[in-house]
Length: 242
Image (tube, rainbow, N blue to C red; front, top):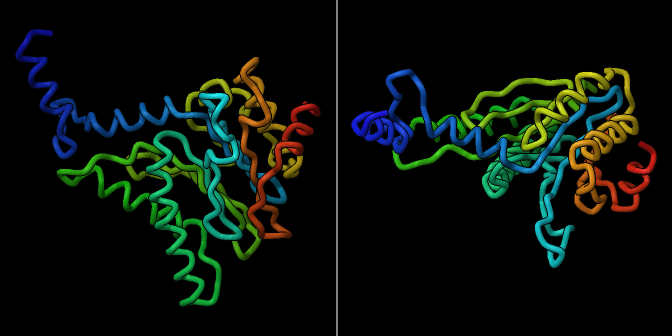
């Protein structure tokens, strides 16, 4: 690559609103790379609920593990986890938490999961075409139980696209853990089995770095409609069973 080509590439590289000659928005692609470097998070749809498992990636023995937030309660029946820049995720969660509260007050009913996902993705998309902004450097897994009892899980991309999944993983462990989920996921597994699958997948990826204090696990059961997090002792128990 000569000097002129390098200068041209840098121009497209620095502008979020400018397509490169080969039809790419480079800043959006870099946001996706940020997600791949983030700590691992996964979601699993079970026959009786949805499970979230995430790696808190504790970088110092002086850190308080409980203070690291990777699990988010959007409403009693909807939860989320994320990979990438978690501060970006917190802004998005604050926005949809407010939206869920407004929906409950206005309509006296629980907000549906897709409305939450679209709210997140609409804001992400705006940040891919507005000068002076940068894309959200985070992917989020949003899941829960609808009022009709259906259980759903969505993956939201940094550029505002979303997909529905039965099981999904994001972050640095995406390739390795996706291969495990492809082999071991079953649509008829229970929440308890989903927790074991999530913890065992995280254990297989982290290997000697695995520590129950490093992992967050949350779930929502269809018959309870409550966002619940596992304690360290419960995670240790699940880890011993796999």
